[in-house]
Image 1 (cartoon, rainbow, N blue to C red):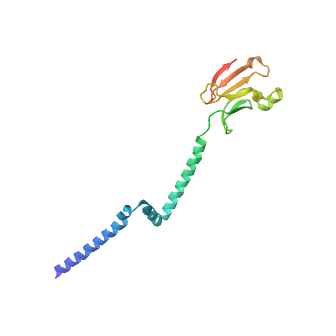
Image 2 (cartoon, rainbow, N blue to C red):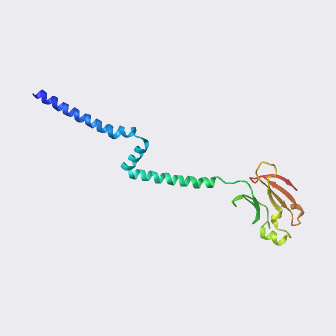
Image 3 (cartoon, rainbow, N blue to C red):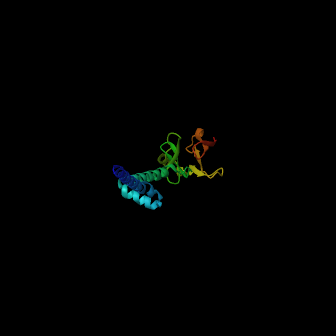
Length: 166
């Protein structure tokens, strides 16, 4: 009798283990056999804080990536030049400064406008000289009558001196 009750107890215990295994299967393995949408919804229901945090982090990273991408992608093709505070300053079509070269004393838009009969911008030009689809900067110096400074310079799109006629 005792042996029979021991077998009944073992049988009952085996049934509980089997039920536990089935429950574990239903909770752990079965959800992975469902379609991805159902698994996603189930995850949101059971882990709302983790989902909200992960979604917020992903959105913030996306915004930062887009903002950084806008600053990284910069038009490096010279569009126009200005004489500013003793510098030849070159800008792209968005008005962002690309580079500057120190020219010397009195090389400024306001000073030159008061001394010249023409606008000093007439002595500066941007054009694609060599056909590489990047504008070069052409600057004429020496228009104030100083013989040692009369020259024409051509600068590459990145500011390197391409050629000079002195």
